[in-house]
Image (cartoon, rainbow, N blue to C red; front, side):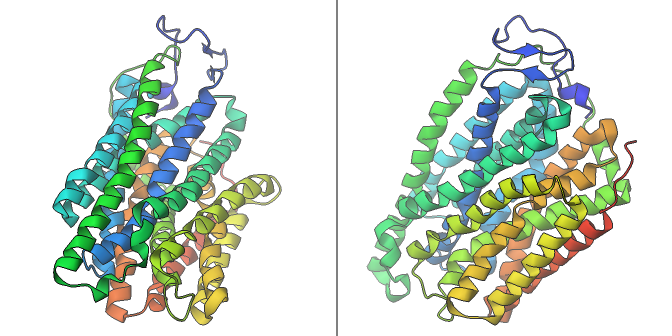
Length: 437
């Protein structure tokens, strides 16, 4: 996909008269940037709820870590299946209609938690997560290129970093309320001490609590979807057409781009693997011995680190080489994991959560370094990189498998540490700029 496949090309008579296409090709639409920031906030928050949901499903269905990490697999598999087709769909129906369809899919996924809770079936929970993630995928396909069109090209990177700050804000806020809505008074119940009718009653109450939490999210999504559909003609002169979309993958023949795509795969995987283990890590006797609800309220500190680091990093990157900055924060993540494993109590807990701070600039920095030199093919590279978000479906269950086979969460952190080391190597190797082709 080239930029012209996405960019508006002429005035649409049905478009919002308050929006206009400038001579430089970008969209001047008052308030539309706020809408895109809201999209980043929503999909960041919904994704972060997995960290709260995973340990609860683990307890309800008596799962080992490998099985529990399938929560991430079900969610992020949608990126592998739908990223490229989603881009083709947006080309045909336009940004706002694509956003409305993505929000509608998210709403459907939330509603599927009701039959999943009624049947207390783990497989149905995974299906609900996949449908929910399908909507999130489509929202990302809309939001990433759209934010680049809402202003001059020279400030596109700044807008993307700022928008991803709202993504981190959503990831910081949602888990706090999710822990209360999905765990609530059930957090103090020791399910391992229950059996028979009491255990069944607990499982029923816990699954219903999860369903009620997602129903509240569905209600909010219904309102937002209606607002987006009402503004479906907001963007002037959208070009809607089909065309080949799989040719983008030949970019993987370029070593630097391929290395960067691999690092996106590793980064998204390790970020969500650690997020999914926060509750379990804090509950260990040698760390803080916290109950699930209390530990769940600490998850916002992990995502909050990414929120703070993203805004600080966007300022710092004006003065520091992007490649060197990436290598530095990735090495910092390895050091923090080593401290978490080698210490106990508060130090172990804080070091584990502080990896969120080192994660902050990784995605946008890896993205920009991988796409550097692609010129007009940069939008195509963006589509491929979005597909590589599927790392969130692979790295978490592999981390869980290591935890189960070794019997230790500490030993399982060797895989995230290795992922960070590879990212550091990419940052160092990409410290020199490439010429635009």
